[in-house]
Image (cartoon, rainbow, N blue to C red; front, side):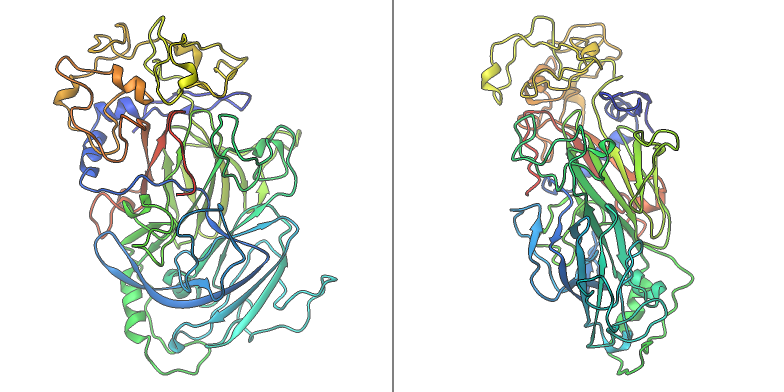
Length: 550
């Protein structure tokens, strides 16, 4: 689906990139973006939102979640029984923690914290007991004593852990000893309760700022807001990052959910519940990222139309930024997720960094074309995009050009420069409009027979922009940034001939890369394409403020 070229960044190991734009223009994928124009989600910017603190009062309850085919699917989920102590990122509009959500609240804590989670079972009586497992942590089923000892257990006995009976509670506590991304999920009747939505994530932030990583500050070096939860994913210099996104993959078989709904009102006093539900054969029709399917996953976090599905999946980045991907398999199946634009360097699995056996300062995780999720497994990886290897100037510069981008008034009228650093990128001025440009392609044209101001000699000829159909994620230009878009004009008008919604050329004009499951059925909703495990990642120009708080 993609051409492969080199896209090395700074001092990081060389990696392969998959430039999406040209194949998009020249392949059937362009038809997909045109089809996406029938949808109208707002451009949404996500970080890794969650609730903060060390004491969490959670609730297990039932409600319905919505899907793009119009269905309300009866589900179970964890939520907050009392208001959390805080939310992260701070200031995100609409931030809330309802009494039931899918996935459950993301718990954001610090390494070394003593974490206490009290779970109250407000599921229907017919569901029986419920619980939470915290794999990777040494869990006390009570409030841990100050000396670390564990008092008498709370809750009632269960097969895998102590459980909360209907209307009752159970408390779990543990030391968050291992940084990184971790999952949590029900340890009771897992084939039913996890399927119904009882799962979530824990993010453990490291305590130190590793050498070479920037401490969290008000702004990034480019002057834009810094929304990171920490300077690095681990206490290791190879885990620095600039942005972070959490993706929890799961699937749903509505037949199972319908059976649970039909039996939810049964009177019951049995700890194992009174439901008789067939969980096999398994035929999921919904494929979810953070509890939503495409295009819903591209709406904002905490969007009011999804009261029980608060988290989205819609990554944005600037060229050269290191983006931390937190990936969890919370369903029953594996899902081959493909991130167009570059490979992903795996840092860790289940909070365990993958380092060289001979040199612990070097990462040894695989470089993956597809980050296949595994049920119950959490994975951290680094993704970035720089434009290296595309073989044209992504900003549409021409020899002797002057800065014209109105978003950078201090540079207006000055010559556009690209002075390579030791790795070939323009990093001398983080505030410049073309910060992190790959200098080898500076002034290099895309078009062999140009319509606009860009000189001839490039690798391809683009058709007249006025005969194209632009989908909402295509900005109408092969160039990055609003001023570059103005240069890509056809003989009879500007590009595009009509405005687009989610990637407007006058303000954003980013490059859209489709991130999706490589299992074709998983990019459908009830067998209707497009849907399921799919989203768009946008590489935005420096002129565009990526506001993680909306």
